[in-house]
Image (cartoon, rainbow, N blue to C red; front, side, top):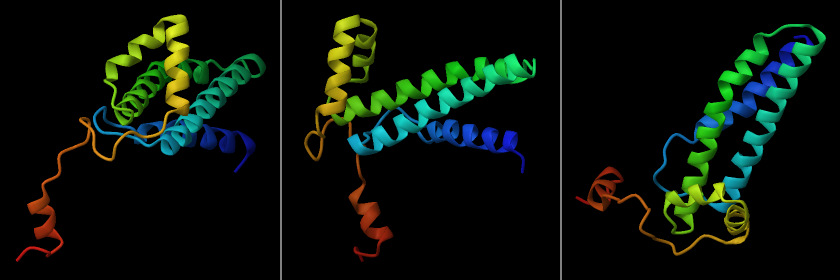
Length: 141
């Protein structure tokens, strides 16, 4: 496996990590949020750096076009990740729109970093069917 294939594989690994987030309801813990967020940012930077190197050095536009197509997908996944983190803090996902306002967005970014998880159960948790769970684990006759 040559160096180009290794770089492509690592870029795809970091970008595909963002695909793990596939929904906008529920919650995500602070630790898991930062692990996935870091991997998504590193993946995006690697993809764009590789695309620019391929464009400037080898005059190959394919990776630049692919990176341009993948960028909106990355921002969509980033928004989904923020929704889950705001739900963990017992805020609505609509608070992501406040990120567009310069200093207010900075304030909520700091809140996402510092503020720990709220109560054990909040309004954004998925409802559990306890009877079905008990039957599945054979705790209920």
